[in-house]
Length: 85
Image 1 (cartoon, one colour):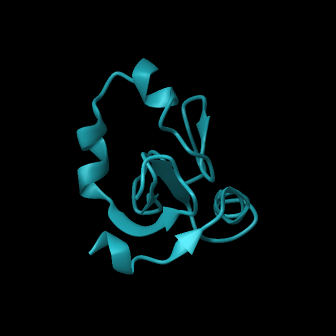
Image 2: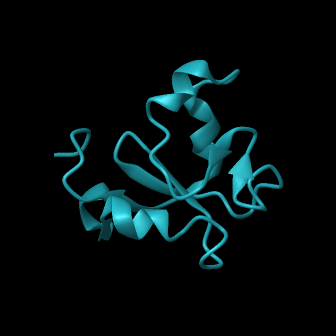
């Protein structure tokens, strides 16, 4: 499935921040998730985190695990990500 996902650059991801466009996306370990349906991300930010970014490193400080992403749709992958093949 993941090999069929569209690729987006980090610059393209940055435009999906809930401010510049309607999309609210975040990346984690090379995958891009649509978090717009989450009330916690609706305005494009979640506590001190902003949409349109790769949150892989920031998750270490979060009060939850990576399983939080299981409830969001994967809509793409980060182009040339070190986490993807």
